[in-house]
Length: 87
Image 1 (cartoon, rainbow, N blue to C red):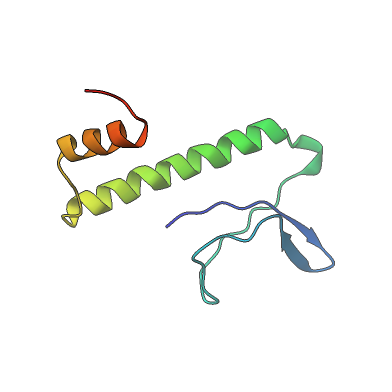
Image 2: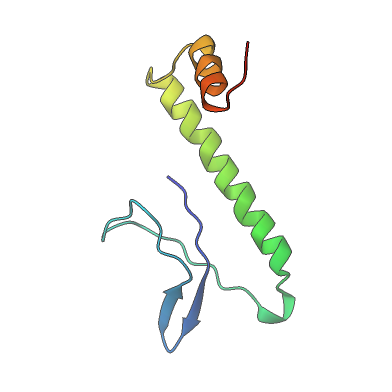
């Protein structure tokens, strides 16, 4: 699993701007310190979205490889019902 969360480093501690779901006390993390003079918030958000997209694609491959897939016709039917789309 890959989950990117923003945070602020202050007084030797990192304070997260949001608490990620499904994380336990022994989850490994990587911390990247950004140069505040070179931060472009929209580029950072774009990078985070790309990382999360990659993680989602990887999760899909993992599910497919472990046999956790379903027929496309089931998905289409579910979406038609969910969004009230007639076939």
